[in-house]
Length: 303
Image (cartoon, rainbow, N blue to C red):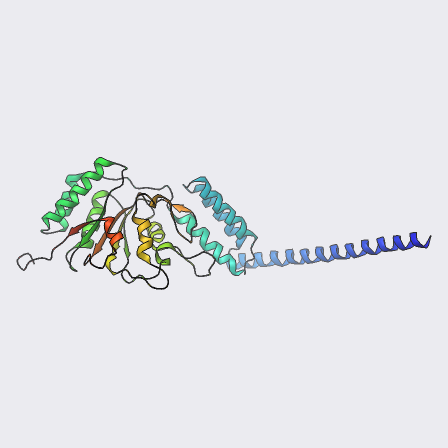
């Protein structure tokens, strides 16, 4: 009889402990719910938006985004994660930055090419005096591109002294092709993360310069000018010229993976034009991927 009473008392004690824990959990959840609702009202009064409101806005933007389905699913997963994070959680800013970057990329958005060689010749003649051999080579490049269609095109490298019109030739090419012009300055770049991006786990992480260039262009087929490619360096943070090999290689750049994005990005539609003052300091593997066009300085009569 006593054993049966002891058993019942133990069962009753366990039930009581469980009920107490459940009640504490309910009280805590109710308290959190009331506080969150108060914070929500306060933010609305201040004109600020919380994670839930922002996540809803992000979901609407994902549905409008012209991107592959696997990219959309990745963004949706990050939005769900962002919605579950607290407003003051330090990780929420990292996730928000990643979502905004993914939403701002022009995944399938392209501009329509213009293949009018006569118009391109007029633009080059309008913008540049002399440089007949250079303009002829640029027109040949544009003509071959218009005939080859989607075939990979060579990467032009305009080599010459400062002030001879290398950058303006690239601008004229972009206008003639109806491409968005984006300039990426590589002079003094020594960190490989400038090309491949930083890991998104860091608080101040950001994508590499090519992904930022696509965000600026708002289309996935701009003309990117790689300015001062001969002044790129290397140190203990890696070799940026080695990372550039993947970007400029037509066999690999259709699935370029930035460390921040962590998803393949197609760079094969981009037209790359590089500028340099000399070819002597350009790494040989990088130089082999480019077609060099020499630009001589103007004579006194031409000036």
